[in-house]
Image (cartoon, rainbow, N blue to C red; front, side):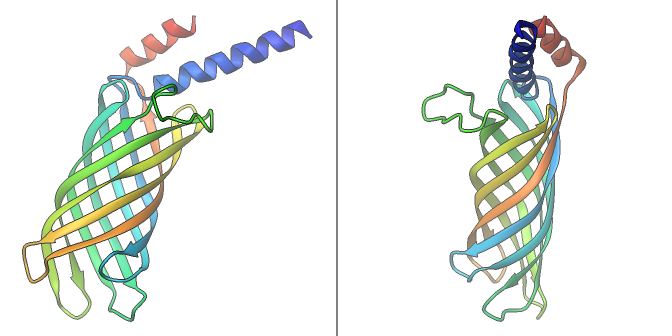
Length: 197
């Protein structure tokens, strides 16, 4: 019985060490948002089918910088035509550590984070109207680690587009579901091994 309890304690300690290892300096994060719901602030609600591949490098523990590509189809519920959206730009992500002020460690297998992006994006509507402009967004999310290196993610984000064409500011709130894969570099892997020993 003592061996079983000791094994359980070591397994939990190992998992906690591994969870910190994914978001250490020198690691990579690649993933994508796959589905999103759109709650329009000035255009009505609707649904989105979108893919947003993203990749980032951890410049410090808990801090990643990288880029994204956005491709999607939107349908607004008020009878407007279908639109195609696109974008490319830079993103940043900051993971909150357990124990930080205001962080509720509700689930032990995940991390809360904030993500922001800025780039160039636009939309092309069925009837021929289109615009391209500054694409930006910010919001909180949660990554639940189903394995030490794969996280299922939910992200609520304010997204805006300041058009350079025939449209001014267009903004909405989105709820995105996706995943991220955390790839440790050899340096980060060695640090994780040293801590585990």
